[in-house]
Amino acid sequence: MTDDGIQTLHTDAASGAGGEYKLEELRLLSEVSRILDRAPDLESVVEPVLETLAKMGQMMHGTITLLDRRSGEAYIDAAYGLSESARRKGRYKLGEGVTGRVVQTGRPAVVPRITDEPLFLDKTGAHSGLSGTDVAFICVPIRVGAEVIGALSASRSGAIEVADNLRLLTIVSSMLAQAVQLRSTLLDERRALARENHRLHAELGTRWRPKNIIGTSKAMRGVYDLVAQVAPSHATVLLHGESGVGKELVAQALHFNSPRRKGPFVRVNCAALSDSLVESELFGHERGAFTGAIARRAGRFELADGGTIFLDEIGDFSPATQVALLRVLQEKEFERVGSSQTIKVNVRVIAATSRNLEDRMRSGLFREDLYYRLNVFPIPVPNLRERKTDIPLLVDHFIEKYSRDTGSDVRRISTPAIDMLMKYHWPGNVRELANCIERAVLLSTDEVIRAHHLPPTLQTAESSGTTHRGTLEEALDSLERELLVDALKNERGNMAAAARRLGITERRMGLRMQKYALNWRQFRTPRNT
Image (cartoon, rainbow, N blue to C red):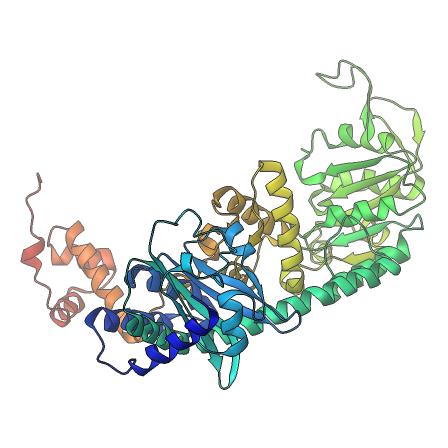
């Protein structure tokens, strides 16, 4: 069919579009309306509506194409029945193919048989091998006012009723227009944010930024400035921040951007060292110094000579160990356990803690003189809640890392999934985010991380569609009745025992049972059942 044939077809179809609705059409439109009503945000309805349209409308494929104003190109943003690789192929210049023509002209198109239509390009390859099958293609514009922002299309096998299918798709496109506009706006904003992040990366690269740390947020730029100031010196640094924020990465940045970069970088997890072994681990021991000391052993400070030692969770050191550590910081010397020989070292100390050392100092759990010796140059490392604009960058990094490590081919994360990550409060910080993405990469089967791949702890009532719709009083009544029933079941209908179990008087128990129309006899069961 020629281009003129398509235009003639819409005129004919439009003239018959005012007939009565069929029952299946009403059911489909009702389901679309229900999805729009229950969605926590308009952006998340696009894919569910496409799936409903395809299943209830008996269609093979359904796609939503958005117009990118910057490039002047239309691309498939959401699809049903297409693989991720096929979806990425669906890009059209204005006027190119049936879809590009619809987006350009704002006029719908119906192709009764795609194999007879030269304008149908099948860029996705989803219709290849269908030469002997009658497959129709319908594409309608998505408008907001007079502006065309994209197109809704569907393909269906077998003969179709042109007017009915065109009318149905046109109505659905108008219902979806607001959601599609919001999705398009959010995607534009994210692309703008990505461009800004790229600009900031370039700007930070010309100034100074540690290569091992990801983030362009204001909070992280403050950390970079502090690291740049203190890294060239030999000053002791105290990093403080919650567990999982990446304090060790900052310590590495300090070491590898210092004059000691060619020396060793020795890590010590202070919380993992027992009081009986901590001095041996830090300062080493001589053979026979204690039971099990079968050979001389160098301690961590000795191994770090000429480089940097990183003392993580230093707030967990015992008072006795704090005294020994204070001497090393002041005099740069120590003795191995079981030896009287003094060893001098040239070591830079970087300490880190997730505890409030000032509170522990006031409580007598941390030495005041040691605190001031460590707190020469403090660097606060922000938690993930304070740098949420870095989450998309971190997610991209972890997707690439764990896809490579697991041999997966995950390429992106869906919009609802990234929204869930942005709304979560992240008590475990970046470490928790990394674990979430690793889990999601393992669960993904279609090259995309979706919302249901994320851990249950990230699921909200809105994202799971389980928002409570009743009042607080109704919820409390429901809980009270449930507790009464459980108590009566456990006590086999004995009201006095059930009242004692709930911690209320028998009179109150009777009033509650009367309120909820409960009968103790229905819970009476023989003891041997």
